[in-house]
Amino acid sequence: MISYEITETEFDKISKFVYDQVGIHLALHKINLVRGRLSKRLRHFGFNSFTEYYEYLLDDDTGEELLMLTNEISTNVTSFFREPSQWEYLEKELKRVELNDKTKKIRVWSAACSSGQEPYTIAMFLLNNLKSPSSWDIKILATDISEEILLKAASGIYSSEEVKGLPKNMIAKYFDRVKIPHKEGIDFEYKIKSIVKDMITFRKFNLVHSSYTFIKQHTFNWVFCRNVMIYFDATTKNKVVLNLVDKVKKDGHFFIGHSESLVTMNKSDIKMQAPSIYKKI
Ligand SMILES: C[S@@+](CC[C@H](N)C(=O)[O-])C[C@H]1O[C@@H](n2cnc3c(N)ncnc32)[C@H](O)[C@@H]1O
Image (cartoon, rainbow, N blue to C red; front, side, top):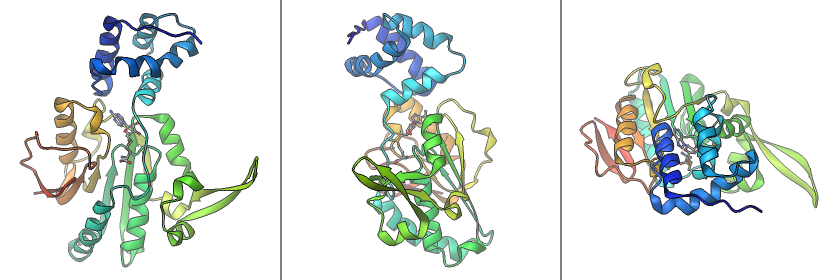
């Protein structure tokens, strides 16, 4: 297999392009990671150098290659009911919403939804915890930069491994089990039921570059922006958080990942309730 070399100049050009387009900050110590991950793209096109690849990236008006590149250097890792303390917090918060919200509307944004486990968790959580879910008008917006991952999310099909962490009664209630032939016998896959799926709209959205104006201010009860800001530098993170918080309703909540932090930010609009949980004030 050909091994490609990358010069610092080539790396700087690619990392600047990625930063400008997607907000992902690739520091120089990531040079080997980038070389390793992107070598398969060079091989795919039959390019001989990272310069040829960079030129192709610049010329690609479809943005497809930028997506492929983003998928290679970022991770889509996710799971159902990730960050358990947030769901415990939300059980109490949902009771407050049920008591006080006369609009009978719940709006939620899963802003880097990956393969869908996050928005489906939100939907299942609401169906399971609201006293009378059918009397609420619920809409969940689920967005991600990657079209490929959104296709998987919208299919709502998961392997036995992927649903393993879910309680058995939830799997029975919200998934159809489908038999699939397998080399060593029979395996199953799990297809999310339409009662859950119909609550969600999937849409491509780049947190760094897309325009936020298609959503009105103060729209959402909850915005989840979890485990994506790890890729952003402070400036990008500030911009993204301000844009997202602007869309949260008063007394609504903003959630980040546990390994993320907003300590360096000016947080006049939000107040920390617990690590990774913020309330709009
Ligand atoms: C690690 S996953 C997090 C999934 C989920 N939020 C969670 O916490 O389990 C990160 C996701 O962020 C997406 N992503 C990366 N950069 C993005 C950007 N600029 N705008 C929107 N999504 C982005 C990736 O495609 C990936 O699906």
